[in-house]
Image (cartoon, rainbow, N blue to C red):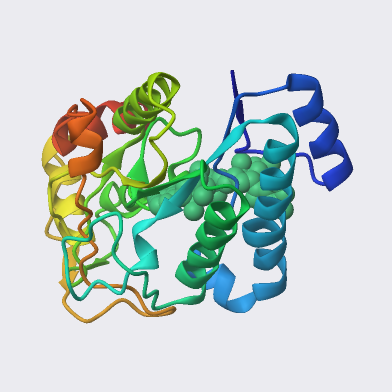
Length: 260
Ligand SMILES: NC(=O)c1ccc[n+]([C@@H]2O[C@H](COP(=O)([O-])OP(=O)(O)OC[C@H]3O[C@@H](n4cnc5c(N)ncnc54)[C@H](OP(=O)(O)O)[C@@H]3O)[C@@H](O)[C@H]2O)c1
């Protein structure tokens, strides 16, 4: 039985009540402040959700004999030496990456049976385009009246949430059979694309003009971003996680409803 902490109650007493009532065997902890530029500006609020909530969920898991599967990020690496294997030392460039790396330490120190599951930039079915750093690009793509500068420097591996869900299910099922599965795991799409590449693909998929999409080859502005954090997913592949939806197919199905 899994308790998914994507949206936690806003105080620790209510969280404890929900978790104790539910009596999970696994706590899939996805709640976080994950916007790098927000984290740079508000480290105190980030500390509460990314570290203190993580600590609290780990305590509750220990109390209930459950384990925590902590969703983390490729931003715990600096992007200079890809591909990154699960056991590689973390070396984050920005405060978001630092907070997630610290969260990972909390999780692994709380119980050696806990799991850290790192993923790169995600996309999936959204209620608003700005819910994902990938789907938000479509806002500018579908408005050819204004030039749209798109980063064409940092390398990304956009990953389908549907594929990620399947990978997590494989890991949780495997862990049920083999409790020695613990520590760090990675999952990622395998198409290397910049945001500019993603935007041009979106325009092509919907037969939109792309002349207004301008490649910006400078490093991203704001909080420093890693150049290439390609994750080595061999550990998950060995468990049978292999489904990677091609980006064109996955993103088309997510954006269809946003194109009149
Ligand atoms: N999105 C990506 O591209 C990406 C890439 C790599 C790793 N990740 C990791 O994946 C996980 C999920 O990311 P996401 O994209 O789903 O993030 P998201 O859309 O921003 O959702 C984060 C969730 O955390 C909850 N939350 C935030 N602050 C909270 C607080 N103070 N108290 C209680 N709940 C709070 C939010 O609940 P409310 O909606 O109720 O506020 C929301 O449901 C995160 O751990 C992130 O670090 C994401």
